[in-house]
Length: 205
Figure 1 (cartoon, rainbow, N blue to C red):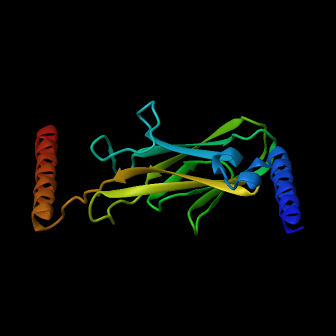
Figure 2: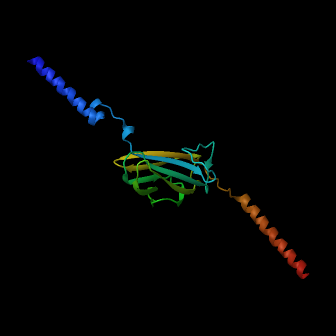
């Protein structure tokens, strides 16, 4: 009798595994491939305005940005799933050394975040957005500083994050002092003397 109960239990267990494998193989065999369920993807890139190519990161050996230089970011949000995704929220967290020129959505100046919504993304559909900014006041930097710019997209109950980095160099401040004042004083004196002599020449007195 005991052997029959064990055999019946084993048979029922085998049937349960077979049933789950047909309708939900992940639960039946105890694995979870997160990539197979990923739907939203975001790709963040950066470039100098005088460069036609976007990069994941720009090293200081290739380009260091200084005050008044223009930097541009490209954000691509894509639905890599098989179903339509609605109401995708996108946020771009910007460094505070930037002065924005144009951007999508709205800008939170307190948190330095650009935020916008994508109403609908079809399966395998991607949309690209541009953010352009000018390097603002980099005189406050002590040295060349690496800036990491993070972007995040959330939709279909999940989020994806990507970053792009670049370097901002310290702006130089023109030196002022006694020598500078002396040079300016001499120049003004010479100009005044030259003007006085020219007037005497023209008027002959």
